[in-house]
Image (tube, rainbow, N blue to C red; front, top):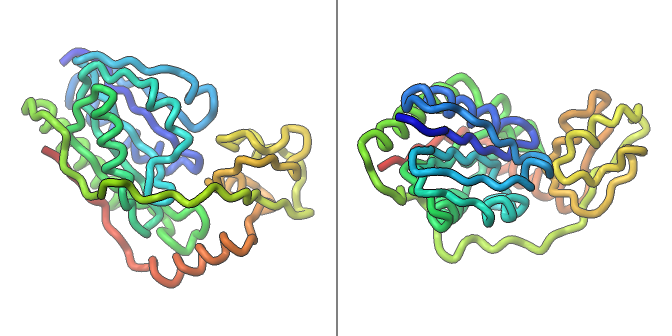
Length: 260
């Protein structure tokens, strides 16, 4: 088969990218397509417009935020021209639940002229606490990512038409009002500026890492990348979420795969 496999991912802490590529490489090989990566993690990537063709395949991978597709992707997805490409969705969540994120992603891609024939939900370490989903995606997850690639290839080669049926409800889960919660910085900070370079919304000053503007999405990329562990959240709403997760979400959840 000719065409391109477009691996599109938003991945502030790298788990979504890791899983996306674990699916994309064997899928591209099985379909005989060139692989093209589209990283939406930083503003330049999200500013680009993607136009697919009927011989192309689109794989969309993203972390679940509040049970939904990240709002940061709205602009990119609204400008997408699917061109009747076949598509697959990969939602990555922190061992609580993905709620309506899969359904929202399938609906969105279908709306923009893609034919979604496969979807999956995988688990990664929760961005707010390493006690939840620790070490995920692990070897078993990566094995299942390859299985998802095989199932997706089979659905495409068999000529199935979407949309694939996935869990979720209409209307989608309501998102809470945006809260102005910004990471704090301890005296351990050495001003190495890694946090600023890794921030997907670029709200950390490039001149002073302790200065953070409004707009943080609490992806915790800055927390995880800091070599001195100088970035942190200790605000009451965040601590309440962490307490809930550590009380109710410790049991291991397994990836789910949905194909035609």
